[in-house]
Image 1 (cartoon, one colour):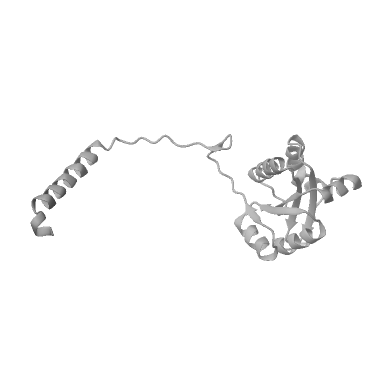
Image 2 (cartoon, one colour; image 1 turned 90 degrees about the vertical axis):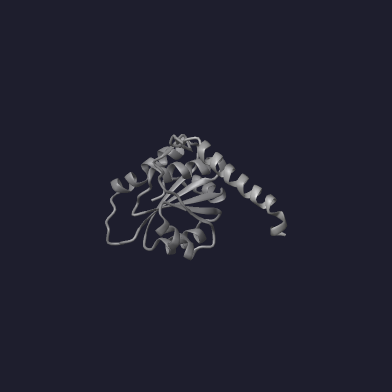
Length: 177
């Protein structure tokens, strides 16, 4: 299923794209956010691809719309062009076919390392994986407060040892050389 009209498809064909791969139709929230953010900064469109391994799985229109609804909403709110495809088979093989069918795909983003390895083995464009980091807020990692004791005692101890070593060397300079 493609959510664009023919004129929008021709525009999509002309513009640079990020191919975002969701296995079994799943696009994590962090994957969607990252893809929309990158597409907006680079002025790319998004081509979301749901890959379902088993062709015997029946996908209804309702579940297919559920797969891409969040992605469609976030893309629209970010002002990013969006298109959706659903394919059955192995992720690497399908992505390789899509790259040859649809031109100007800059790179691929996926939600798992396993998918990344499968896809990277088949294609020649860059493939990135995105993971959910629960310690992020506002795009920055929230550092935990670190309570360190001031190392005054250790500093004085190492200083005293160094002083003793240097004194021993200078006192016994005739023996050392």
